Length: 154
Image (cartoon, rainbow, N blue to C red; front, side, top):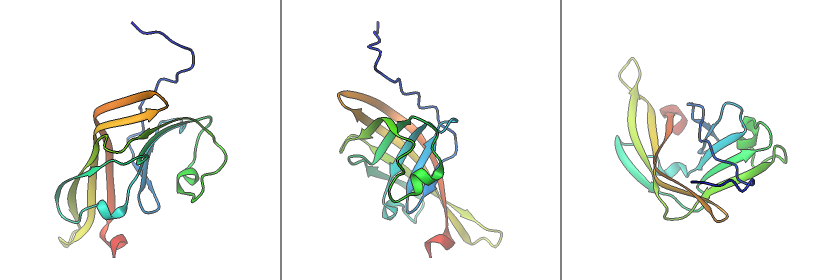
């Protein structure tokens, strides 16, 4: 049995399948209306250049889930200082030690059989997000794939 206190926005976590990026590794997914976003801020040094699986521990605020009062554009995520509008009306953030992101690295080759890109498949494990005294917990959450061309790394 559950009750509604009238002041709780139930997170939906129904995001577009495309993982978008900004700058040096702000990765995010939005819902179809662009009023909700799941954001991962990660240092580019954690991305391996070898095939395999790597686990990166989540730190405070590394993952954020935001609900906005109106649709956001890519300029919101790519700006050094976020614009004043739209406003964040609810935010959930990861806490240190609450889980990790599993990064599976594979390679993409061009027609000459030369390495052309790294493909990173990312999955959150034991993700814990907090907002005030409320928590969201995900045992496993498929965040998405992110591709980086070799030419961008050189």
